[in-house]
Length: 311
Image 1 (cartoon, helix red, strand yellow):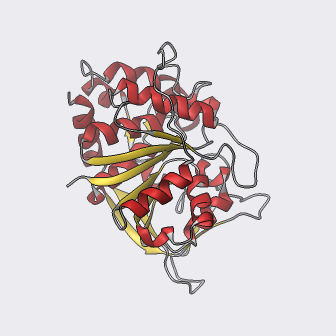
Image 2 (cartoon, rainbow, N blue to C red):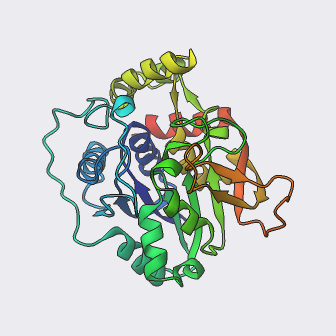
């Protein structure tokens, strides 16, 4: 039976590839896709999400619902240098969009979906956690009705990608992340830079998609991203941050996790957004997050390429 999921996205390049994997895997029952301000504005994230669904011929069956247009308390921080002004590396700039977002507000959609399917809904969060924080503040009982939350964010054993200590999603809205981590969800899984930086899409992988329906899109959308990654790290690749979170929703065995107490820094000039994992139980607090520590990258890319090559 397909797992019921809601994808929460700030659709840039890797969110889009996550959506592609979720739809093409045919292993997830996608109740809807909610959008949030993050990599790009809420309006652009919503437009990009609709474009990807049209590209996948899935626009009619999967609703898109707008969410928060800014972090809880902070100004927006976009990532145009990485994702391009349109968020998709220019890959779908010529597409004439027909699909529009559904009525409603993303946090309300999460609350309603969990009430409709108590104990069955997995939330896969690949942007800042603003929408889920709004939902928890509105309905604290949501934490008992959601099956699990899988979120891309943080770095617990390595450096950040926005500041020396902070990963982008945590940096943009650390207050939202703190609310989610302390809300009391049954299961929270952090898919952070410690594992996503090992899931690198390379020219070899793109070559395996040649001739497939989505091969040209993947090549075009990731081209500038790969240049930026090479400039920063000396590796010509695209880190599959958000697709790996989707992959974990499809197959938990892709990663090895540890159960620890995790918190987020919100009051530091140097370290706002830092994800702090208490590996040695120094704080003597109950574990609250399943932290991804290892990833089977070969298995992940076999899943990804197989899904994208499917018709």
